[in-house]
Structures are given as C-alpha cells and as structure tokens.
Amino acid sequence: MERYRLVIRRTGGPEVIEREPLGMLTPGLGEVLIRHTAIGLNYIDTYHRSGLYPLDLPSGLGSEGVGIVEQAGEGAGFAPGDRVAYPAAPPGAYATHRLIAADRLVALPDDISFETAAAAMLKGCTAEMLIERCARVAPGEWVLVHAAAGGVGSILVPWLKAIGARVIAHAGSAEKAKLAAGAGAAHALSCPFVELAEKVREITRGAGVRVVLDGVGAASWEASLASLGKRGLMVSYGNASGPVPPLSPLVLARGGSLFLTRPTLFDYVARPEELQASAARLFEMIRSGAVPVRIGTRFPLADAAQAHRALEARATTGSTLLIP
Image (tube, rainbow, N blue to C red; front, side, top):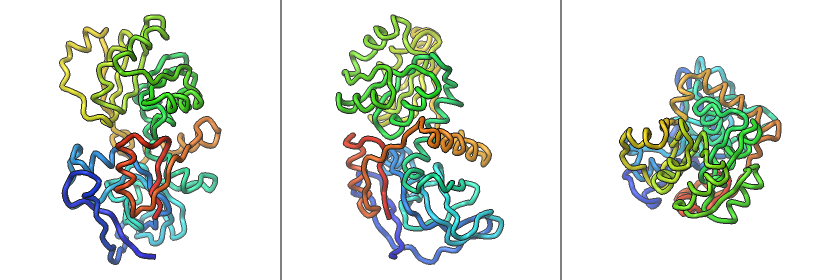
C-alpha cells in the first residue's frame, strides 16, 4: 500500500490540496502510528484550506480519523492491532498513516464500525458538546437547528429529540427539510432566511426559541437572532456561508437580553478526560438507536479536492468520508 498524505502549501480553493509521499514514521514517547481505515470530512477542513482559520504552512488537513494502531511508543497505552478513533486532533488526518499523541485517541468499541465512527466522531462529539455542555438543553425547550440535514445537523436533530427538546429544523431545500423531519424535527422548514424568524414565532406562539444552533454563519445570522426568545442563547459554531459581521452588545440587549457564544469542540475536549467522556456519551447514543449515523457519500482519499467542492456547494447530506 502506498503511503501518502495530502497537504497545502498555500491557502485557496480545493486546487491547493497536494499529494506527497510519506517517509518512515516512528512513534515517540506517548505516540502511536495509525493506519487509517476512514477519515471524516468536516467543514472546518475547508476553513483551514481557505485560510479562514490560519495554519502554519505547509500543513496537513483533517482533524478526524479512525484506524488501527501499527506501532505504539513507550507510555502510549495502546498496542498494535488496537482499534482507535479521534475527533479533534491537529490537522493531518488526510493521510494513509499518521503519528498522533495517544491522549488524543479513544479506543473504538467492537460494536461501532470504523465507518460509523469516522462519520460521527467530530460531528457527534460536537453535537454532545453543543447540546449537553454548552447550551444545556432541557426537555420541552424549543431549539432552532440550521443546516439540519448536514453532517452536524443530522446528528443534532435526533439527539435533541431523544432528550425531549422540540426541534425547528431549517435546511437549504425542501428535500433536505424532509430528511430533517424524518430525523425527528417537530417542524422542518426550507424558507428563505428573511422569512424564517416570522415562521419560528408562529410555531412558538410568539415566544421564540430558547436556543439557536447555527453552523451557517453570515447568511443566517440576522434570522437566528430574531428567532430567539427573551434571554435566549445564540450558539454560533460554524461559518459555512462566511463569518458573521461585527456585533455591538446593544443588539443582544434589544433582542431581549440575549446570550451569545462561539464554541469550538477543541476547547471542550482539551483534557483527555473530557475527550473520553464526550466519546463515551456519543457511543451510548449510537448504541441506543437514538442517533442514527447517516453516511451520504464516500470519496477516495486522493479525491479530497472533489469532496471539498461538493461540501462547499452544499451538495452533500449526512456525513462524507474519505477512504484511503
């Protein structure tokens, strides 16, 4: 098997992704060498590639992968043959093999397949973080979920339903809205953003939602704020349509004493025990059947640029995988 990785030496469009061979990789203290079996594609990968989230160049891409340990360094706590996964490592997952710190890994249970884990780790741990530790959603609360048929959205919707929340899903097309409805949304919309807040108010009898989970960014920003009820929480966790504009705190006051947070998974799984707990909760939800993991498309790893184009064109649903 040819060993290679994909790198960027400059920022830009998908065309900047290059392939280069891997030399000898030997794990050091507390490291393991993984042979990837599947790699998760995530929107943050496009932010790194485009320069929206700056990296030191040249750089690898990809924060999420699964595979088998080939070698383990001293003190790593893993052995050759172990099944492992990671949702939040430094960029470098777009590779047939990689060295990684063992404290960024979780053991992959035998009843969770490699592809399920690759499709769910970053997105599922993000959902766990957003719902249960960031927004702390309670049963009966109204939650607006943007891009509800996408990678994170398709996990957020059934997770919220499973804990008893009431979900208003918004998607980019009627077809995607149907997918969100099938995943458990109480209401699934595909209206223009300029109409969204009014429809949310109609559904909630004028009250607005307690939480908005927004990974879209600039395009949905005003609609999200206008959909919140008094003392509601705006959780802006992505920039699929570009970064949100500068904000005066007075906007939050006028909206009804609103709260705003911009979380990243990396800060919520910074400690090994946080990572292990988040992954364990995700595996529990998958096992229970409450959170089905839907794989929309698989691309060969070598075709990562094509996968980026499809993701940015919003031509994907569910999770997209890169297969070495």
